Image (cartoon, rainbow, N blue to C red):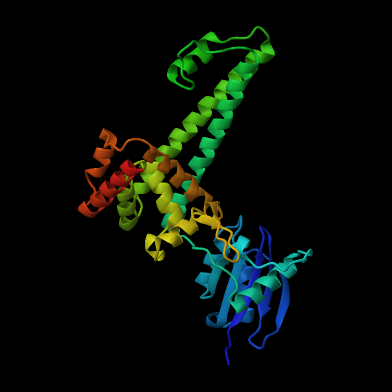
Length: 332
C-alpha cells in the first residue's frame, strides 16, 4: 500500500492554506499556517517523513520561494498552472480552504499540469528581461503623455522631423514653451519622465549585457546561436532563452509552440474541422518577442552588417539553420 501523502497548498503573501490527501482516500484540511520558513519546516516534520510527501501549489505572485523551501527539506514539490486546474461547472464558492482541498485531490488524481521551474541562472535573466519589458512599456506611456499634451495645444514639430529623434527632443526642450506657468510645469515634467524612462531602459540594457557574461556556458551558447537568426539580437535572444529555459525539454516543435501559445486554435465537431488564429494561452512574454522577431521575415532576405557580425562566431550547423530560414523567408 502506498504511503505517499499529497499536499495541496493555497499560497498567499502571509498565509498558506494546507490540505492533505491521505493514502487511504481521505482528503482533509489542516488549516492555515503563516508563510514563513519555520512554519513550513514544522509542517513537513508533522506530516513526514519528507520522502513520502508530494506537495503542490498554484503559480502566482509568490513565485518559487515555497518550492525551493520544500525542495531543500527533501519534499518533492510541483508548481501548478492555475489556468489548467479543472473547475466544476456551477461551482460558485471559492475559499482558500476549498482551493487547498481541490489541489490535494487533483494532485493525487494526476489531473494537474505543472509548470517549468527555472533554476537560479534562468530566473535571474528572466527577472532582468521582464524588468526591461516593463521599462519599455513605461517609456511608451511617458512618450504618449508628452505627445498628446503637445497635440492638445497645437504644438507640432517641423515638417520632416521624426518623433523621438534627437531633433524632435531638441525641439520639445528648446523651442516649445507655454505662457501659462502651470502648462510650462507640465511640459517640463513630461520631458523629465521621457528622459528618465530612456535612462532606465539604457541601464537595463547594460544589465542584460552583464548578466549574459555571468550566465552558464550552455545558456550563453544558446543565446549566441539565437542571435545568428534573422530578426533576433541580444535582447530578443536573452528573452527567449530565459522564458523557454532548457530547449531539450521539448521533444517536438508543436510542444514549443504550445508553450508560447503560438499554435493554431481549433473548433472541430463531427465532420467539420475549423482552424482559427493562434491560441494565445501560453507564455505571453515569449509570444511577444517571437512575434516581434517574426516581422523581420516580411522583408526581402538579406544579410546586414550587424547580422553578419553576429553570425561570425556561430558554428557551421547554426549557420546552416540560419541559411535555411533565410531561404524560407524569401519564398514567403
